[in-house]
Structures are given as C-alpha cells and as structure tokens.
Length: 169
Image (cartoon, rainbow, N blue to C red):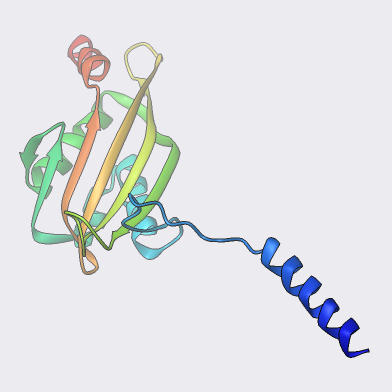
C-alpha cells in the first residue's frame, strides 16, 4: 500500500509539473498597462470635451505649466484649445472614433517611474461647405505627474484637414 501511495504521488507530481504554466517576462517588458483606469478615463474625457467643443471643461486635468505639442509645435493650453476649437468653425459632427486608450506605468528603462496614457483614434468631421466627411488617423499621449498631465502630444497628418479649412475660407 505504501508503494502504491509513493507511485501515485510521483505520478501526480510529474503530471502537475508538466501542466504548470511558466510566466516568461520579455526582457523588453518594463512596466504594466491598464485600459480602464482613471487616467485612461481622463484621456477619454478630454477627447469627449474636444468633440463636444467644450475643452475648458478639461482644463483642470492639466498642470499650470503643462506643455502641448501638436505635431511638434509647442503651445499652452489656451493656444491648443483655441486651435482645436477653431476646427468646429469648419466641420460639423466632429468625433474621435475607434479610440484605443491605454495607460502605461514604466518600472525600468529611460522612463522608469513615469506614466503615460496613449490614445490612438480616427478623427472624423463633416465639412460645413460641401457635406463631405474627412477622416484622419491620429495618436496622442498624456504624460502624468501624479493625477495631472504635464505634457500632451498629438500627432496626425494635417494635409487634408488644413486643405479643407483653406478651401472653406
């Protein structure tokens, strides 16, 4: 009986070892990613404030000295808001569709200790002059210091957007 228990124990041990899942950490993995956290929600709220033409409602999200980089042009919150708001003079039904928003907390590397929320989106708007829909893909990040954004970057190809505004002036 004792031998049967030993054999059964060895079989169970062998079986359990073969079915274990080992977690392998990629050497390039330097942090964690969240999708439904408060920072991702804040980025989504900023996007909604923009599309509803109410950016002032999102001003408290940013530090007093926050820097806004729109296609690498640096500006203040007020300048960014004025530029984004001006688009509503030329487009109706502005929206950011297909949003993918994730917050990344870096534990290692050059960004250790930093948190960024990344947002990929498809900007859409209906030209006021001819009713055509304009579609532009974009990307933005929000760099966090505590619960405030100290830097926002937004990138998109401005060619068709700018051309549509010029044509409507």
